[in-house]
Image (cartoon, one colour):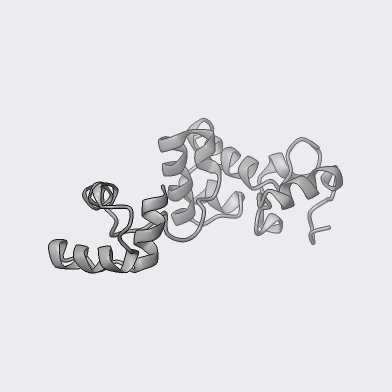
Length: 150
C-alpha cells in the first residue's frame, strides 16, 4: 500500500502493470478525486491511465496545466511532454519512449546504399576505411558489418 492511498483493487492489476513497465513512479502524489479509492477502475499506480486523465482534466474540464499536472503527480514540463506524445501518436503516445539511441546516427541512406552495392567479400574494416575517405564519416567496422546483414 502506498502511504495515504487506499489499495482498493490494486493487487490483481499491479503485476501486469509492473511487468509492462507501466507503474506510475509516484502514485502517492496523485490527488485527483478520480483516484481517491472510491472508484476501483481508477488506479493511481497505472501510469498511462493517470496521464490520460491528466490530459482529460485539462482539455475537457478546463483545469489549468499546473493544477492538472500537480493533481496527477507530474510537473508542468512533464505535462507538455505527455501532451505532445498524445498529439503525435494518440494513445500509444502515452507510453514512455524507450531509452537510448534509435540506431546508428551516422549511417545515412546514402551510406547504406553504398554498403549494399559493395562486394560481399570485403571486410567491415576495409569498407569503414573507404567510407571515411570517400564520405568523411568514421564508422566502426562492426557498425558496417551489422548494416550489411540487414
